[in-house]
Length: 193
Image (cartoon, rainbow, N blue to C red; front, side, top):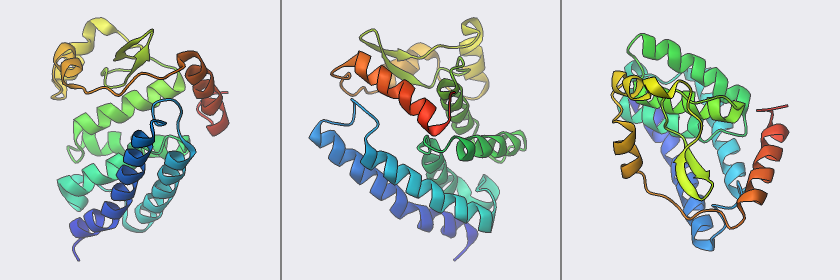
């Protein structure tokens, strides 16, 4: 088994389980309202398994994991939202690797924005969308005048094109309750204090 094969083969079952649970929760109509405990459990378990792989093999980058391996491991990192320290540690490694042209810039952008959102900061690339006042749109963006320039610099489409391409799930049944639960969750897992 090559290193490329290692990352693809070891993460494929984790991603399959993630997608299976997600689809089951969508079918039950409970995914859009809260971060469901079943989904959170899968994300935490997957992240812990990936963390062990990283400790043993190093951080997955293009030169040691290939494009598919990087994308699969990134998805696990992107879903590791209940483990802020892990996600932020991975973000640092993504930045360093991207600076060496060994990590896809668009994946870095999605992680940068997700961490900023959870920390309560404006995002840089506008990749994070959520239901806000009944509309599915970007969460707050830092220096919005330069947004499309930043997006273009890393190969992302313009914001209007991006928004048109995103498929939306149904809005939450009770947006106020969802927001309250979200803020409580942010504090519980350590994104905010």
